[in-house]
Length: 85
Image (cartoon, rainbow, N blue to C red; front, side, top):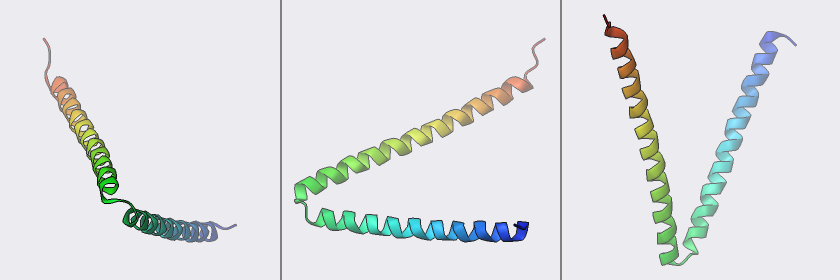
């Protein structure tokens, strides 16, 4: 196969994959929402609270790792600049 044909096939496969994942995500969200409508209000509230706690913990972990990595980088740069005699 030529290089041009291979790149077009890869692009087509990528688009098909993205569209398929979009449809899958749509149907997943749709079915979850329908499922939540049939639950009791108290149970749905507990599930939403647990999901929110999970998301907040993951986001706070990511943010703390980002700032930790940033402070390590600043510390390394500071140590490079300081010449010990």
